[in-house]
Length: 334
Image 1: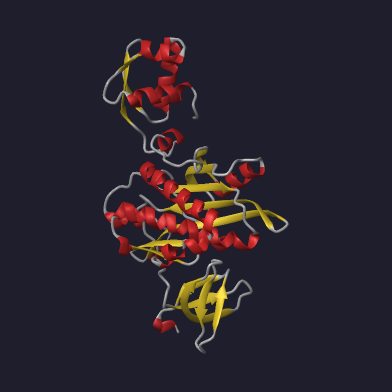
Image 2: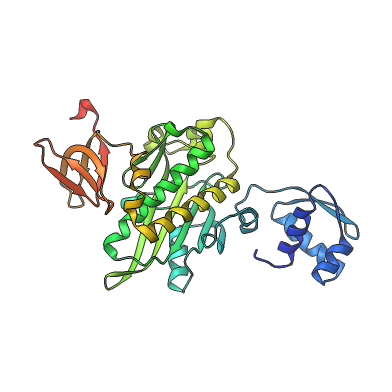
């Protein structure tokens, strides 16, 4: 909605708290007629805000919608550059697609796309990302880092740190949250967040990167598709209570800005200890399905400063993985 008249009315009503604000005061502050104030109020009501009062009288904000509107997120957002420009979509095919188009048109570093639902949400390796409306957080951020292409993969584990720490703050349990290389954050051992990065580059430098982050916040596990219901969860399912999506988005964006700033100054190596503290796969036997269809087995050891997964083969030699599908191997399947 931006800082149009309705947004300014909302700001004044929010500032008034439980008190009513007269139509005359709103009219004078905005420099418009009382009739125009009424139209702004009706616009806000149409967006889900509960506003008591009648035309010609005072107005009181008594309820806010469960929507990730820019004005809701901006109200208590502490970031300097991330999500200061938000494009909100009620429904879209993919926030990454929208953000990519905006970036090609010149969108600035930190420009963020948020959707209430996606009809074609995308995950890694062409997988679909389940995106029911009005329950979770689906966001994509335009980044314009000063990075070589070779360093681009480290942006995903960097973002994973921010998501993991935001979820820890919500659930209040450090041990419950872990990171599965390369792009999943887990809660109680089950996937609750997926990330997808797409890059546009010129020569050896990144022109822009689109960082997509989807977090399962309030979706009921029972409505997950059958194929991954056993592997996925949501924050609310874990906690047994509803999550404030706006507050979570504010917290996540603040943590994400902090880790991205650290990454820009010092590189991923400076963030490695925070990543390794939540690295769920260390010491676990894994299968690596390569892009060419081949498979390799070994034990996950650590994450390298370039973002690659270090794996120890059965013969004691080591290899690293920058791309490919990595899964844990259960004893009975070895």
